[in-house]
Length: 334
Image 1 (tube, helix red, strand yellow):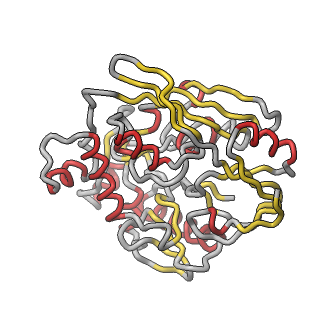
Image 2 (cartoon, one colour):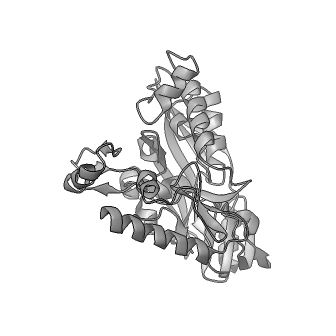
């Protein structure tokens, strides 16, 4: 276990922070040994794509590098696949598409590790992790004991789970089991620009590979590459509001985009709200909003976590003053 390790290359925002103690684990046994030696507080870090450091970490950072992909059960038209939590999420999706296993293709190019996927209940283009989720295994940080979580036990919500609520910081997810289709795939093309992009590709009867390709094209055209400019993808959740709130917004913005929810509420794209307030492409010091997607806050180089937080608070206040809607960050601010 090393001391005072830079976390700059381990977070996609490119924020300089250091860990007082650092180690990497590649198996559950290594994780348990690391936990026995760890100096608290303990932070488990995966792909570093959903964290914003505002200070050095005073305890132990454990980098999760537990890998492996295995088909564990077969059914008539589906399989269950168990995936090590340290695997790249996009890498896993590409593997699944290559094996002609359907269900995760709309989640292509989402950054981060497989272990982070259930924490956030990641979602994109009409599909969420919970739609293919079976269960997961996790090690309790305080005891080293393994616990299995079923789908109901995870209490998935919109970009939410029990791991962001009552169980926050208590577990390291070690594997995730997903249910994927093996034939007669049901493709989801009705959300966002997927259908339009498929048409531009000349595809009339899309396969799961076609959908994955379309999603990658869309995301690549809108979202910056963290290797070129620091960011963590979508910084804010898309707010879900009462219909009366949306109708009030529509009085002054008749073309306001929205998605009707089953419970009668309305989801409004946070990026649109931010853009209407004039933040898209705006630079503030070393940080700012991306010029192609206002939902993405970026580090132009040398930004501190405090600078990013200050920008986020300014945007939240601006949107709330203009629309009466309060944005919530998706990102874990540490």
